[in-house]
Length: 253
Image (cartoon, rainbow, N blue to C red):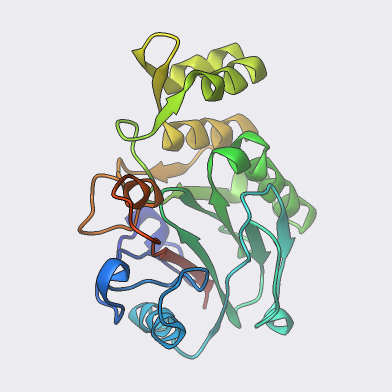
């Protein structure tokens, strides 16, 4: 499990970005696979989620994990929505009776915390969601819910690294057509054919663009670090039949 010490200092907040280790799943899902969308054993997945909650001392809380579709949708949730199917890639709450969870395998888990009002938001940010403003939508919903921008801090969890995210020129053109300055998030490998994309840096830019001054992230690479992380791209390159999902959790206490 990985944490940010800056977030850990905030009273009444618990968070953790979990690796793939210390769970019950076997084979390609070894071992803390928390993705019910995978073909892994459902009972083991649910037990893995409980293991993660217990690690944070949150075993008595129910967890809400949205049904993620790479959208830009963020929804407010509370304890009455436990076990309901929530179509969204971001969830927000001010309830201390639930935990929020995000599942990833290369995309970035992103947390936002209002340190004064104690409002939290958890977002699944792949390139599609980030490009179509899921970050902005999440913060906008926090502001509508009573937050003030200067009270919000954020952090970006483990995702695919800048040296591993290979993309084609058509992908690159989508970002350049949006904003010419997006060129700085790409490294040309073969002119007019292949580039590398820096997802974490792009998300960080989107966060700063909104006006959030404190955002924390580290240079993880879920693709390269097979020991600690599931990776959709790595599993696809290895021609594996499926891929597990790491869980990231944040909660008010």
